Length: 206
Image (cartoon, rainbow, N blue to C red; front, side):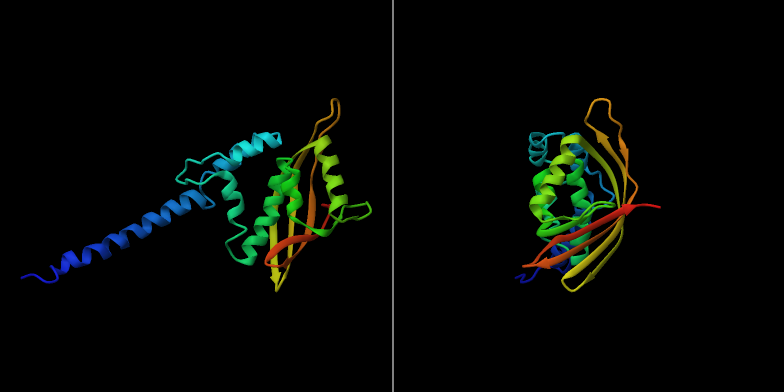
């Protein structure tokens, strides 16, 4: 009477599991890896209104992932190291800028945040920051090309240094587009487990 089967039959489940690991890794990086086709970014690039953005949030991507674009936008805020979360904020706020998505932009800032634009008085507090963004989105379509050069995390404080190129495309008839060539320093703090921007300073690249 057989009690345990042959060694081969007992090993088959283990071999099958081992074979599935590379397949699972391939699917993951196909869906989320930096070299995958970013279908969400392609859809968001064509969005011009809040209604367009909401519609893209419900888009189900087809490159191996079954989750919506809206889910993918939020997932990095739940998982990952502090450094990766801070990096995602520095990149994500520019993506929201380019979509003129005011509500999303403001979520990246702390209520007491300060903007320090070159040659202007500081803009202090979320209410004043909102007014500044409302004015920008009313007059310009951002087409910003961001670059993150450095992320330094020390405890509950982080500093990001980088560069923003690209353009602000005018929405006013007869006006001229504005080319961007700015270096920036972003300071973030983690409070109650959430990273927020507390200061953003930028200056023209010399």
